[in-house]
Length: 210
Image (cartoon, rainbow, N blue to C red; front, side):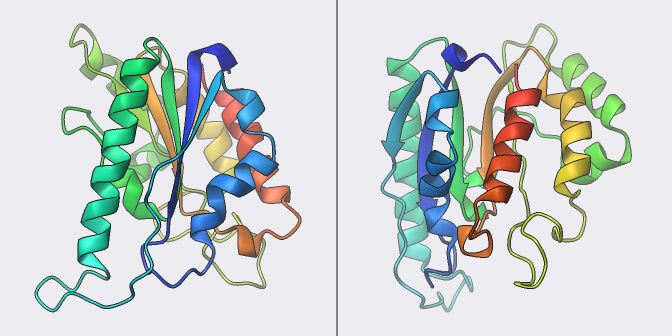
């Protein structure tokens, strides 16, 4: 990973509004050394969600705050990308919501496709992006929302790979030259009191990203 080519933007985001731990993810990764791995750390977007009420029509928890936070993240990301031309964003979202508020022109390859055949996924990304001028965002989600008994990162949600296999598969997609950014989500520092799993994620990013 070429530090000079990246910047970090934190998004302390907890989709449930229950302060269960996800919003501390940017701080946890900074404590593990992420700021030193990038050329610039531009701080955190105003994405903290405190409400827990559920919108009656859509069923979304804290809908108005979620919309506000999404706009705040998008605005701060746009400013940083303008101010830091040539550098890719590494966005640490905490909760998963932030990972889905990305530019609509970006093409995506979902986790199950990467799990099934990482080499094919990498080739697909390269083929789709060849000559288009667009980019791809790699969005590893460590799955640190499992049982408190299990180690963070060892019990990912269904359809997503474990961190160890994500490391192997990531090399097939993360090293694509047209990677425009990375979003890390679904990480709960309260399930990683020693910081060991945060360190594993940073090791994965350092070995995988261009």
